[in-house]
Length: 430
Image 1: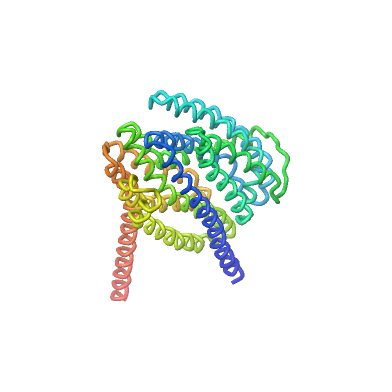
Image 2 (image 1 turned 135 degrees about the horizontal axis):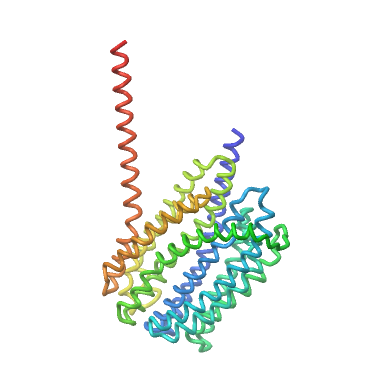
């Protein structure tokens, strides 16, 4: 009974943590709307497309930050925590330095592939922001491990607000496309200032080669996992930028940032709160009910996506103006696709909380590859075709999941029937 009371307390804590993170995301996305409005006012559709292509490429590289020591520090047993934290500091410097070099290389590739020197210059400049994050990485992971998500949310929200509100200011001052670069540096500097003195235990860095290699191997599996997820999120942008006209791509990029961008932020907030909750429940040996609670909340988040999608024809012309009305139907389709992605993210989060990194990698890689292949085979040539291709690729996972569950249910029922027939025969024989 004591164990179940403990679980119920943690379930309530999960709801509180989700509300903190959702509150932060709602506030951040409200200011993000101001950013989108300002970009729509100051930038042409072609320039808008350049900005979103740059941010998509940066996001793919930046997601690797989540694959350093973070998940291992949050998930590890209490007796292993000190060793993970001390070596984790070294791991973070290795990861972030590598990310800087990787993004510099990516900037060259993107500049040539899309014949866009602006994309190349913006990506190159943004790569140096990564060198700020190792200063506070372990502190942030410990805050998440201890589920101090009110502390995290307030500071993370402040950084997001500063980043979002600075872009309209920089645009007004005439910075143009470089506004997004300046905002990224502002975010990184403020993040470092706010988290460097977090109320968690301090650790001094060490470098144990064998243990760091082990951590990097675990991180390597997570890197592949996160890259699969990132490519799944942004592959449509990368392909559409090459297939459709720049102005049409700008409209599609607007639809994605104004629609699915908000949905993805809510999904990220939900899964950020769910992961430490699942980890703690797994350590306490009560993960089954925790998973059930998480899935129940997931349904609530999915309902928010539906409301956002079907309200798009109303709020798009009111907020952004009539010239963006063509994107409203696309937003509705993309928000429906976001529900499928939410289901996949939640399932993979459950696997990661149990330490099943290889299983998570397999799941993400297979279904991300299928989604990307669907988009490539579709060869969309319009806004609506791009959105339907994304929806078709996203629907593969829930369709597979439902088929597996129905097959499992039929198998269970068949075994039950056979077992009852066997018992009946035995009874008659006696």
